[in-house]
Amino acid sequence: MGDEGPAATDTAEPTDTPEPTDTPEPTDTPEPTDTPEPTETDAGTETDAGDITGTVEDTEDNLEVTNHELYQTDGEVGLQGTIQNTGDSAYGYVQAEVTLQDDQGEILYEFIDETEEESISQLEAGSEWQFDVVFEEAQMAEVTEYTIDVDGYPTVDADWNVTGEIDNQDENLEIVSTHLTRLESQTFVTGSVRNVGGEAAENVEVNVTLYDDDDNELFDFNDTVEQEEEVQQLPPGQVWDFRVVFDDIDMQEVARYVVTANSELV
Image 1 (cartoon, rainbow, N blue to C red):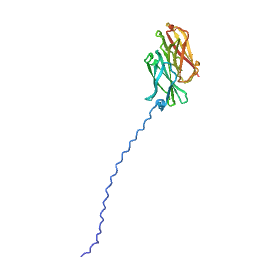
Image 2 (image 1 turned 120 degrees about the vertical axis):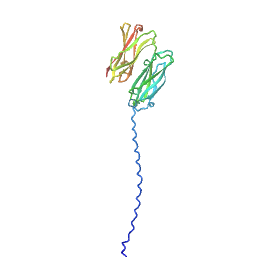
Image 3 (image 1 turned 90 degrees about the horizontal axis):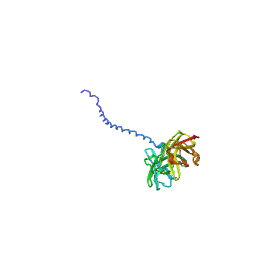
Image 4 (image 1 turned 30 degrees about the horizontal axis):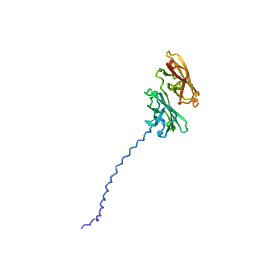
C-alpha cells in the first residue's frame, strides 16, 4: 500500500458577512424663517395713542365739546370729536384748536380744524359738527397730553356782502384762516397765522385792509403779537390766533377785505 498523505485539516467555514444596516435617510433641513420686516410707525414713533390724556380748556358759552377721542390707523394719529351748538343762534364760524404737550407741560404742536374747511356754511342752533385733526409729522413719542380750545362767532348780518382774501407776502408766515364777524356792536376779523419758517419770529403783525365797491382803500387795521401777554414771539411751527377789530366804521361801505402778515426773525 502506498503511503497515505497528511491528514487534511478542516477548512473553517466562512462566517456570514453581516447584512449592511440601512443608512438613515438625511432629515430635511428646516427652511430659514423670514425675518419680519420692521413696521413703520407714525412720524418715527412707537407710542400708544391710548397713553395720551386729553382735556377741554376754553370754549365759547354756547359751544360744547360733547366727546373727543384719539385714533391711530394706518400709521396716522389724530383726534376726532363733536362740538354742539347749545345756544339759540347759528354760528357762522367754529374752530377747534388742539395743542399737544409733553410731560412738562411744554407746547410741542398746535393743529386746527374749522367749519370753513367743511361743506357746512354755518352751525345751526342745536346742531353738531364733528372735527377731525390729523397730527401730521408730529413726534408722538414726546406727547403725553392734549388740550382742546373751541372758538366761534355767530352768523353775520344776512345783508352783508363782504368777501375776504388772504395775501401771504411773508415767506415765513402762513395765514391759515380768516373770518369776518360782528358780535354785538363790534366788527372784527379773526384768524390764525402759522410760522412756517425755521426760526422764531417776533414783531408779528397782521393787517386787514378794507376796500369799497370801486376797489378804493377805506381803512387799515392791525393786530400784533406784542399786544398778547402770552405770545411775544412765534416759534417755528406754532400758531397765533389774531383778532383785528374795526373801530367806528360803517360796514355797508365795505365790499371786501384783504389780510396780510409780516414779521422779523429773531
